[in-house]
Length: 278
Image (cartoon, rainbow, N blue to C red; front, side, top):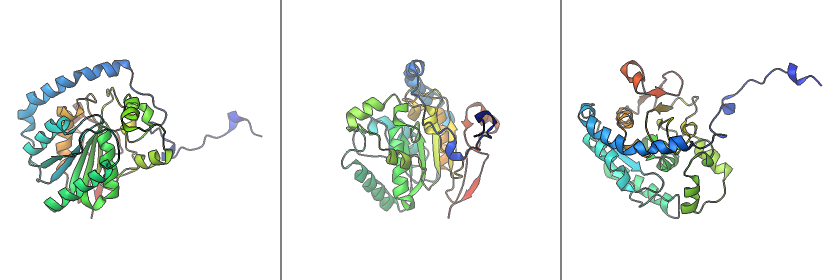
């Protein structure tokens, strides 16, 4: 038998890369930094005149999913921002998000069908934290009805215990075991343009759990300076969302973090790839 010291290392494949599977939750210091969320709301109000100068959208429909333990009231600021930029923004109308309880997923499906039928075109889905899981999974089930998916601090990869909200999730959802097959499916990206907006100073979700694998040309990851609780009110996140929603789905391309943007945003994916969507 050859000596281990002389063995050649096995080349890594994309599946071997770190996808957050062994990541630990954010520490106490990052959790304490979540207290800055109110300041993000104040900052949004302060820079609203600047954000209002951004080009308006094409008026298509956007459905927003709230995070764990939150309801549509938590996404009011985000939906107001979207409406100010010309979009038809709607809440999920499923009450407080306490996990995929009986009837919730079917309610999401019906909401998407209703909005698609009402407006006659594919809709964009935005999900904050756990809401992003709903958005991604609905896009997988109904790709013909979905234009794009944008998630905010959503832990779609890695292990559920890599978040500081896992115990609360178990308590309110009644989930006590990890379904590894289900987790593997959740990690797969939807077949539509998909953006993950995340923060390395997120005090609830380990940022590694919000990274789309780079080998998928229709996915991207945009890093912003934000708290988890305040991400849906953060000016940088709002800017990125507006930029992504303006993308033509027939010729989608990844976020450009060059020029002045490099001072505010970072991207975690391969160089820009233009993808045809027909």
